[in-house]
Structure formats: C-alpha cells, structure tokens
Image (cartoon, rainbow, N blue to C red; front, top):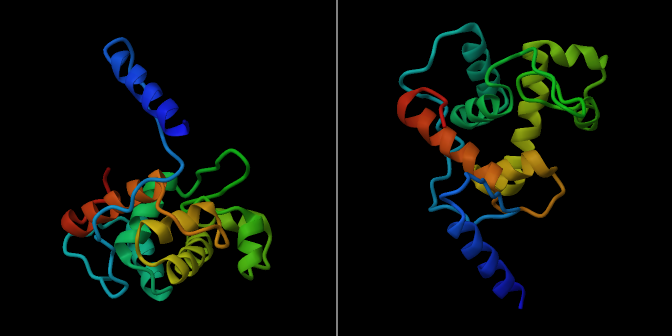
Length: 176
C-alpha cells in the first residue's frame, strides 16, 4: 500500500514536470557503485593553491582523512568560506556546531571555531570518526552529517559529497 502511494506520487510528479521544476530528496538513497575514497589517497595532482585549500589539505593529512573527502565536505558545507555561519549555529569551513566540537574534546570558546584552522581540526576530527565507523564512503559521509551514532546509511547528502570528492580526485577541483 505504501509502495503504491509512492509510485502514484512519483507518476503524478513526473506528469507535472513540464509545468514546474521540483526537487525531491529522499531520506536515504541506494549506495552508489563502490567508489569509496581510499584512506591513503591523500595526494592529488592538481590542487587549487589558495591558503584555504592548502590548509584543508594540511589538516586532512594530519587528521588522516582522505584529502578529496575533506575538500568535498568543505565545498559542500561552506564553499570554502571560513566566515560561513549556518542556521542553528554551525560555524566556519566545516559548519561544525560548538556542542559537537565539545563532544570531541574542544575546550575553547565557541568563537574560536570561526578560525579556519581550529574549525578544520575539529570538523575533520568529526569526519575522521564518521569514516572510522561508516567507511570512506557515502555511509561514512552521511554519518558526519547525521551524527556519529546514527544508523549508517547512504543519503542524498552523502551521495552529493562523494560526487564532489570523485571530481576532486579526478581534477583537483571540488565541484558538483
């Protein structure tokens, strides 16, 4: 019954596609073909040479996070804007919340997370732990967004970040 409703909704949506553009996101999507980023793949050919890009690469290597995934997260979350502030309080390049950083061991003032390097250290620590639990894959990236104790599953967010990471691995540019 639930499947029939979903199919009817999908058919109705497709029939209206010519009238308006809509974007439907599902809570979970099928795991894409295994294109996991290897944890050891921290060297990339053409890396953009800006101070922020170099800092992302440096901290990713220090935190043992695949460089392509680190760049993909930063691209997705803040578009490399260290001053980014999201709704609900996430800060900086990785859009980490102060409460999340505190749960990882951060003891400073929340305003310190506006510093690019401090933000990367704690944001990529969170990503490192998510990858350790869910793998350097869509599931691991999704855990980074959903929370470390969520059920590991591939989401639209995880798929999008993995696409950006694959583009970065191939071209040295974190693009969608």
